[in-house]
Image (cartoon, rainbow, N blue to C red; front, top):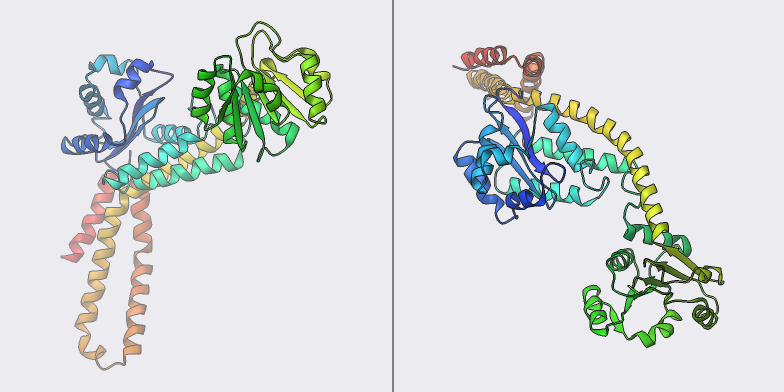
Length: 424
């Protein structure tokens, strides 16, 4: 516990709940403030952060230990028109250091559908900012969230958890970089409008490709896809002319034959003067004839090649996740311990205020003598008494934090009361 309070995290994600349940609980940024207000009005939690993404809905809250978050769970069910038992069957709940560890794992992308994906950290930042903006975080959650962002950045810095490609799209980018190095300024042709082809095309554009040309059996469909990517639609009879100009060709059609055959590509590569052309064949059966890879300057990769790169990337991320888990575990223990010590803060404030009040009172009693001193001398006296007070209270403050770490609320209260008596 943190003093007489308990930190909890509760929620559901892609592992515990189907999309039908997740979408019932999903909260947009515009809806979350009203939940803060309701939670505060009903005194369900003294501090709350709500994280709502397409894959998870979670609450991080500071509650009374006798409750442990159960009232929050009932609120969630009622607010979203669910029966309590229907929600709890999909819900997970953590307390204390386990709640801290879960938050650190989420922010570090160790609990994501794709381990190492970077979007979740930004989503955690947004959730914290929204809670802070609406006064929903205080002396416990504020330092916890700051520490969360620090730990997540440390995981990114000290491991390679986010570097390996784990999707067909990013695998295509990696292979293209093997051919060209940088993709800045490169041009691409998307031949066909298959889903995999669009994924690879989107990834290429995200990683620096300047221009995308789209060709499809149905020109209207080419126009539609080109509009989505900010590209240019062309007719099928223009494909050869563009193969001579682009650097990358992504082939993703439903044709049952070789759309790009050896004879066709020999002419294209001669026109290019054998300048490198990267071809990704995502069609099954293959649309690029196997022999094209033997032509000078033509580099052909198929769906199996991309899948293998993605598979290897997942394995590398899993290896790095083991390192990241160790970082998170150690940091969570340290963080929860420091949060426990913070329960002494109100008592320490009282002790310091009592000491300062006594110091000022003694100076006031000596005002007649002090008035005879120069301003510089009075500054020296003031600084000296402040230093004496700090030294005197050092061990007392240390004891207060030790009592807080030991969850000795009675001892902490008695220590604070003793100084309150001095102040009276």
